[in-house]
Image (tube, rainbow, N blue to C red; front, side):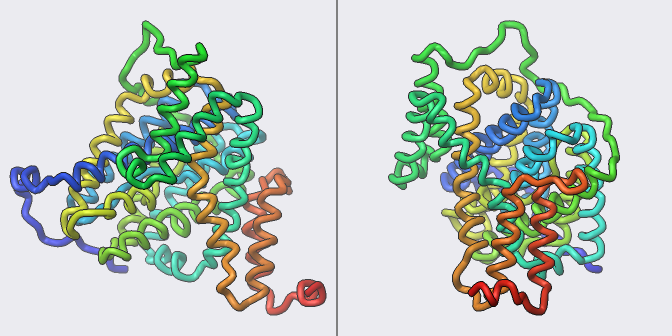
Length: 411
């Protein structure tokens, strides 16, 4: 198997600095703000539901942003294209249903096995095959089912804390409707600022302890390798990285003329997942939304500079993880859940649209998608394995079936 080689380019860092332009700086900053505000809310939502300790959350954030930022800097510079690396949000969302019966150390064991499997898929070339041949509509139906509870948190948040959560959603809506506002103040940033200001006036604003370490102190999480965790998490995690996140990121780059090194990226995601997993973070991935922002303006060939700005800012967020977490966890829980729901809205919308597309001619495909979605949201646990895994299994069985007499009779 042949890995994609980087182009032969000059290593003149002075020339690199002088090549920075307004588009690169702006796109890098906006992409970083977007990729920090929403995903952190997802981490906090998962941590809150699983009652994780703050030192574990700090280590997770350090790994997610610090290591992701360094990988972005290195890959973008070597390949001279925007290759923004982060962590899988669908994979994090999986933990909501898994950590109510699995320990976090069991989840970490699954992270490490997932990383090893991705290395093997990248080295063998199967990653490219999987991205091309696995039915994406079934994967997106599973993703939509996993993300649906986050969307429902919006309703619960407004019910429990109408003032703070209502104004937070209002800020998100304003920035989403008016593109000129959203271009410089992304919807998630606007929602965050509106919510914090409202909470502060309501006496529930963020609190920074007087005695705390501002710098991250990552910790090694001792993994536990259990059969239940391997079966339940590994396959959905690998698919969420390769067939969801990486595919989305690669597709975004392809639309503007970049040929992303798919096999190399899969291998890097595998090794990155091993390193990040030891620190308590879900697997590494190529981030689609951030890459879309990075290529939204400017000339082809300079977009990698914006990605390097993004990577630097990402790494700084990881370095100051304790400050971020202490501030965020002092806010009302409903506010955090609503932020997580808002962050998931674009991904949930995209997943639903791709899963339930009406452009396909096969009714069996439609039925397989519905089965996947319904099983995923059912929250069943067969053999102590949560529903997202079974959603993929049952949906794929229907997809492979040569015929489906029940469905045909019902239509």
